[in-house]
Length: 213
Ligand SMILES: N[C@@H](CCC(=O)N[C@@H](CS)C(=O)NCC(=O)O)C(=O)O
Image (tube, helix red, strand yellow):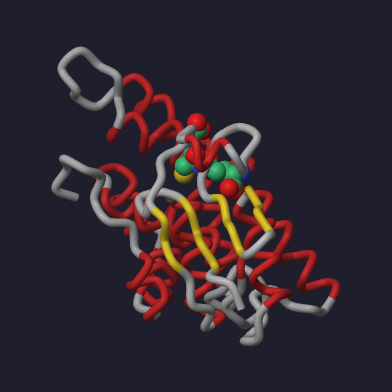
C-alpha cells in the first residue's frame, strides 16, 4: 500500500477533520505541512484550499471527498452510517456545518480574533459583534441537536461529529464563544466528551505560529 499523505496545516479545522477520520479508522497517514495556495496544494485543489490528499496515484481535494475515500478504501469502523436515513442525516449535518456554521463561526468570528487585519493587530470588534447574535442561534441549534443522544446522528460517533469537533475546539478557546459554549449545557458536555477521544486529542490543532493558544 502506498503512503497516505494528508497535506495541509495542522491548525486548519478541515485538516483536523481528516486526521481524526484517519485515526478513528486506524489508518496510518503522514501529515505533510503545507499552507493554502502553496504549489503542492494548488496542484491538487482548484482553489488552493487545505486539506488535500495523495495516495499513490490518487489525489483529492475537499475534506468530505477525502473522508469518503478513506472510509471506503481502508478497513476499520465506518465513519458514516450505511443505513440510508442515518447516512443522509450525516451528510445533512456535514453540509449544514460546512455551509452555515463554519462560515460564521470560523471564517467570520474566529478570523476576526486570530487574523483581524486591524492596524495594531487587535481583534476586529465590529466583525465579532456582528457575528455574536447569529452565533447564539447556531449554538442553540447545535445544543438541541445533540441534547437527546449526545451525537448529531443516531447513537454513534459519526463523520458529522468529527466535522464539527474542530470548530468547537476553537470556539472553546475564544472568550465570547467559550462563554456561549458553556451556557449551552448539552453542547458543552458533548464537546468535552468527544474531545477526550484519543483521535481528537492527537489531531487537536496546535497554536498558530507566533501565538500562545
Ligand atoms: N470545503 C473545503 C474547505 C477547506 C478550507 O476552507 N480550508 C481553509 C483552511 S481551514 C483554507 O484552505 N483557506 C484558505 C482560503 O480559503 O484561501 C473542505 O471541506 O476541505
